[in-house]
Image (tube, rainbow, N blue to C red):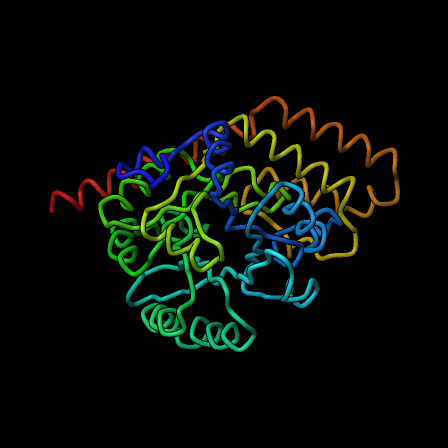
Length: 334
């Protein structure tokens, strides 16, 4: 196990297997984490950059990065120069001509100037190839996040993903994606000879629940080994049980831990059941009535624990995953 697997399926290991590698000096990192600086994270103290940084260190993460949506605010709050801290960001690039849809890209080891220049390419030029050329010219590590994810209400274009994936050194195995999609990503990475990184993409503070293992005395070495396939991942896929647990965490954050002074629309998730909870919790009536607020919270816990909202979401996601698989098979045959 010491040199890294040749077969991509062998990259997927258990936490128990990971312990031995960590004892041998392999490094671990969760390369996709959101803080309160992201628009879709609830304003809870547990989710601010300082709290998550301390949590990551306590969990034994060797490299800690925060990849908020289109912002480096976490580093302005926390500071750029901390032990094990790797500056990062998740930038959305909409390229209607070459890509045909929006991509989310994680970039690491960037500075302020590079961030603003990348945002200009993303928001003004809308040119994915120019964006990638900039990353390569500046030797910035980057990842193709959730390759088979498409924005809500957008037309899925899975046939373009293999072509786009060729531009990236590493593809993401995302904890919040179904197993079918993550398996497609693994197969694509193996076919193209790309690296794989397992990430939580957490918006609720679950940093390090899954992670990537590679050798490297610094982040650059670590990432190069991931890109070269000299790595392992401790993965997890989205299941009904995981989603119920996630929903209960959201309820806790919404009613117990989040501040009440932020615009509701700023942290909607795209999952209807969760967004309904957010809206309910922000009603003026609940804010003025602690008893009613507690009743609403208990009712939402009860609904969540039935598993019905999770099952509805999983069913919808499974249908979309099947459509994506069919479209890819059709593309292969043409």
